[in-house]
Length: 274
Image (cartoon, rainbow, N blue to C red):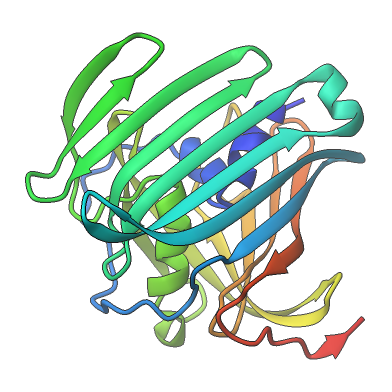
């Protein structure tokens, strides 16, 4: 089973698709020019449940707190994912992701990735110098520190999740319109592309929720069946809550649903409660 890929995805909803986009394009990313933060707030918390076919395969949590880093006011986001139940007997996963990012612009200052996926491990810390646009990548396993350039407004895996929610120009989007943001993952720059598919009333455990539907453009082949194999739904309200992710893999399919949440900044829009 693709448990390794599943765990990575769950930790940011976008993590799965970004980690396998593997396209280092130099095209300028389309980034919003707004500089406001009105989507999420301190102590927000999400729990997701992930299914691989009929398996209740994994759970993942995302939480964010307001704090300081080197004298700056930042949001500290933490993602945690693990396989559960029968899946854990076949493939044990424990993934930890962290990001410290600016409370106004959303750009990251520090990223942490500590994962154990069936014995495949990584322990990496990245410090982003937003003035020089240089990232210091500290590989703790290999005990190496290396500087790499990163593109303007580049996001890490976790900060991108909050950046997209906060700065997504939903009011101006039209169906089939695409946009992109710059990403920096491990030691490389990527362009993460997303296509807006339109609006949809989504049936969830909480009720019928008005949602915005998107498709990340991913690399087909080893992991995904096609370039548009992943679909994301977020709430069509001020929170832009991640509601569901669905992906057709080269072998099987995966689905992640929002299971629980706490401390939303705005009322959650539900048309029909269950």
